[in-house]
Image (tube, rainbow, N blue to C red; front, side):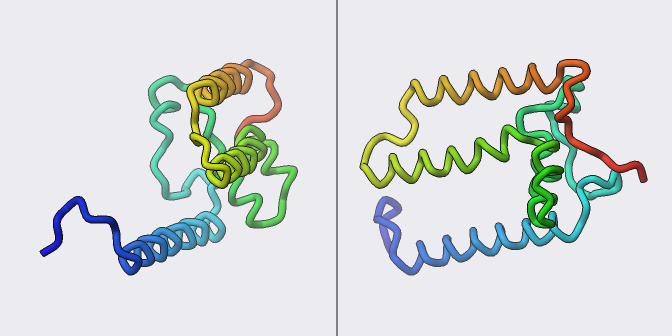
Length: 138
């Protein structure tokens, strides 16, 4: 029996990566085949929106992903431009920091991300703001 603090073996790590990859592919397949723009889309509601009535910084992310999977960049931008631009930028940031051996999320980076998310939440919930997640009437 192995001690609980032993490093993960290569086989267990590989299974974890394969499992995470399978879950990602399955999730993307569901979002690509089903239509999050449809009110009958089966997925839990956003808890932030349910509590406040406001769109959270990630609201529209599933719709954006669906639009990207279908090659509709303009619709993806309308659904959530913050995630459309921010996620690739964050991925580049993480990869560069990881490759150079520096801390991935130092405190100033966390503050910047939090301030940007808060600002986006306020701006996107301003009456008349044009970039809001689209929902098709059923």
